[in-house]
Length: 590
Image: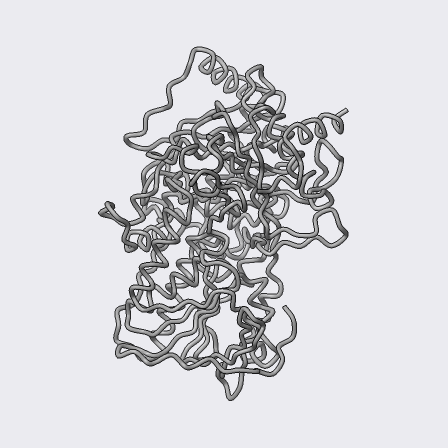
């Protein structure tokens, strides 16, 4: 368990005191070539995250012989994991994760896959393991928190005590007073500009305009900046408002607004799983893929995609013992995260397709999870909490309430833990409130203390303490983070971010190499965001391209785009004429 030898008492007391891939060598062994199936050829899928598992799923259903090679664990960043040495009395280990899962109703491709993964007792497979929180909260530091019901048919707001109702009204009025009416009107006007912009203007102008600039945040009030500029980008694209592409933020903002209105949605705007991710989704998925004939090689690390004679001739892969193998197949799908995938593309492969070299310009950043295990249920909003004033851009959710039908204490840990507060840390380069250091400069123990302090600053500041030091049992920080507090910290699971211009550097799933395809959340898809949905959609695109190249008659994968409201199309066509004439959008008054 991630306590680094620190007891709860020392942890709390300490916080209080401070307040005052290598080059590929020659292959040394050869893995046997998979037997060709009756319905297709052989495919080596490199990477077992959402993209790799989706590709394997679609290919196996179409008769291909598929082997997935995964360096660490199936599920990638989406997986959950066990806290080491945390199980007692026949219980399962405490569940941990890279970050909490979020499956909004704007997703269509991923839910389709989930419906096709069998789960005992569920007519719609693992899809039926999705549950919808009914509210969310913007937690303000030093002010009342903004609590919102999430609109959706059948949703009923959580019951409020008189004191909670008083606080909710106070927060709304306080924000209304501090957020000037003319700023609200201006923001709505900017939103309408984007909504009525043609695709060309979005791709060529708004893609190169930071959201901060588009919303004129620099000239607005602090509340405008925190809620409408910073808060929106953190919730939607997990990147900095000063850098984020307006095309990306606006596209996803439009989709979420339409989702809340019930337009073109697969389900409610906010959905999470009703159990740890591996239990509710990944493990059943892997079991289903095995039943379809998919083979898995866990602990195998891709070193290079070997290129020759215009094709991929082999994938050089190290097995768990460090022995290198030349894996051969008819087709290869690279489903690794971009920061790992591009290390495996040598000069010859890059020369064969210039879009691979452009991937070097794609940027990744740190967004990493930490879990706090509590011996008391925190009286938090039953949904996501965005601590919009926190220096480290924290978002969180208390999970036990949503894991319906489970007794957390009876099933996990030592019997004393009743809830898991899962927190995402999005900002790792800004000084915190305890040590005056960035998260990367802190040790793992200091990161935990700092995050806990920032959570308490946001949630315990209005006379009703939600988090108690005495209820803190332990914590667990993503093991992919290493070297914290040293000059060279590393993170094995970075997240693609979306500064201006990113859209034009994202590659297609189909490459110029006839037996090589790309899948991953960095690949160009309609959602234009590093998400599980993007990873799933890109894998479907890769499979379709593979089917075309193989001359297969198998049905193509369905790839759903984001919903486009038809009533805005006439306005977009008008804007296209203005754009081609060099004129601004008709609603763009500056």
